[in-house]
Amino acid sequence: MEGVPVEIFPHLTLARFAEVAQLASIPSNHQLIIVLVERWRLEIYTFHMSPRECTITLEDIIIQIGLRIDGRPVIAPTGGDRAQIVKDLLRIRPPSFAFMGNILKLTWLDEHFFHIGLHNQNAFKLTRFARAYILRLIGGFMLTNHSSCRVSVKYLSLLEDLEITGQHSWGAAALAFLY
Image (cartoon, rainbow, N blue to C red; front, side, top):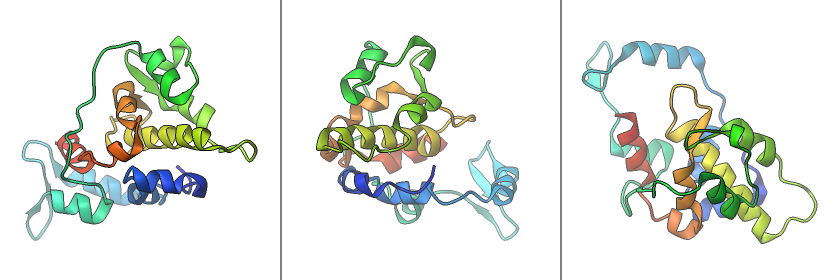
């Protein structure tokens, strides 16, 4: 992801995703990631370092990533018409090939929400763009699978009201997802 669009920064702040959005825009150090992956012990969920074992804690999540670790649990409804959920909240109905089951391809989101148009920026369009941006953060950075190219549509329903979105414990969800 490139830099955070300033037009949606107030929306990201309201949803408490501003810090993680800025972090996600920092280029990755692939060599460091490879070293960390090699040192990760899946059976005990720790990094094996020369001085001792270490793991990621809730304190690390809040300090380093800036995600909330208390508040409402991140429990998204399952079921429903996935394309209709996207249409209701993003105002575009994705075609069936944009999905893999209930999972939306991030390439479809990128295609439709990569740049904020310079014209006709109203509050509704900026909110929709912010929702898509946060959904890309969730699928491509926070709750990512091995490919980092898909996101579950169920998370979109938690982005309907960005003020309520900010009350959820996204940091605890990210840590639980890691484990």
